[in-house]
Image (cartoon, rainbow over the protein chains, first blue to last red):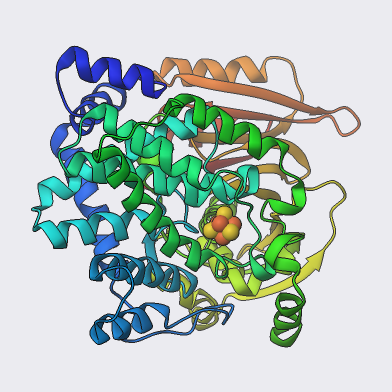
Length: 288
Length: 226
Ligand code: SF4
């Protein structure tokens, strides 16, 4: 049983296993599921993520609130033009994240990771990395295990809900989970995974939750797109050997405190930030 | 959140979007309402409070509540069509906005109509991440999360009834996880809310139902999808 990063790292070192394997061992021990059952549930989640991140890539759909749609397709068209400032993998990852958000907002079937609002970040990170480096399913599932271990630590010690902690708790947690996963998938050490997670969470610390009209559409979908990029660069930073000066557990604690101190207007109530800009209010009025 | 045990509490639920609280949680509340009516639903009136009322359309909340009432899981692709399916099945559904003093923003109050003309009333809240809590059922304060099998009795408040029920459960190896008793002194009617580790067999439930003092027994099945 691990309750924080320090304990999880301790167990990894003691048993000389990767984070993914330690998370698996812990899940077997604490929930009475067999390895096969856990793998098959994760495989099912992966299938849902594959579908949700590609569903509307070429055929945008109408979302419930009508605020977003078609962003993924635009990113793919842009990719074809081959003039991007970043690179094709970053653009592809953003396209996938956008599509998940669009699919979610049109009542598609998704896997909350850790929430529905942030459901694009982990699939976009893992699937794009897997495409680039031709990973097999087993390696992708290992990524999901790492991500879920990090998510569990955040849930135990802080929160992953936008209503309780702002968007830093949703898209920030998702980015931290994805960053740790990418780091291990890329051959990084367990310590490097924790640095990557800490860096990702610090990068967006303080981000408020301010969805237009209270709907999980905007700015949510763009925060999924920037969230996956946050995960990718944080993993790269950690893999390069740069360390987070503040350990992950303390970053989580800080995130929690920032969330607690955050005004209610900035926690999913749609009473602050982007949600109350003139344009946002006019849009809501028009859609009524 | 303190009740995080499994990685699937973090990676999950698998659900129809867009919102774990306004869509998945709403479907789970609907599911509890269905159980409260013993799966016999011919119509429903649903009152929406707070954010449930304000953002219902943008979150598919109405569809999700009705999907639950029809017995669908939060990940059922038919959830989007729930209002049409209810219509096809001849189940009459209506909605109304309501303001409940001091209630959590994501609260719904149900009136479920059963085929015999009986009405079941309950109030529940989606507290975040898809987790729910029913706080009132048929006039009694309750606290039902749907995490466990829950039996709710309504009985005449006579001596010995409680121990008779708990003994019956114990004799059949049912382990009680949590139990609360609510009394209404004026009417002399009381209620027991019993959460158990395992499901209680239909035979035992029937025996409890037939006790002289018993007026009604409601069973709420665990609502967490496998
Ligand atoms: S802005 Fe709020 S609703 Fe949107 S993704 Fe962030 S936390 Fe979720």
